[in-house]
Length: 171
Image 1 (cartoon, rainbow, N blue to C red):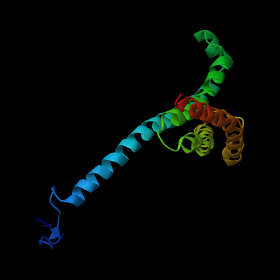
Image 2 (image 1 turned 180 degrees about the horizontal axis):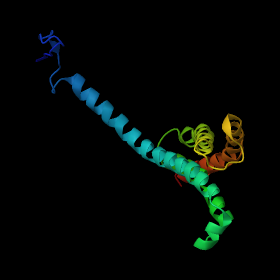
Image 3 (image 1 turned 90 degrees about the vertical axis):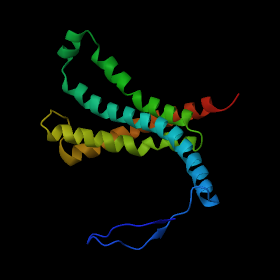
């Protein structure tokens, strides 16, 4: 069996041999991709959920900082409690990634150590760029927020990763 294709000028190009679906090479390829696909889906979903939690932390955090205490008082919500709960999201993200990945649990959880400061600094820089009142403006402010997110986020992410690894071990 051969596959033909058309060139841009309209002519038919050379034939490319395509193995049949019954060949041993195809069966081996299909079993290999199935095994990799299962692993990546399992790790990918947990890791993607963690990335969404990190993005929610950065974006919602910047939005909550923009609101005054009066807005929280009118909603009947404590501002400090809301911001404290928001800081737990990186811990939960690392826990989920470490707990539900089949292999490389430490790598899956600790990978957020690099993502959190970059996303947090980018969100802070963008909110300052769009005119929001921020403590530290510009690139120097993004560097400060990067350092803060790296310091506090490291503690939270390492804690969440190790708890996730410990709870994922068979009894």
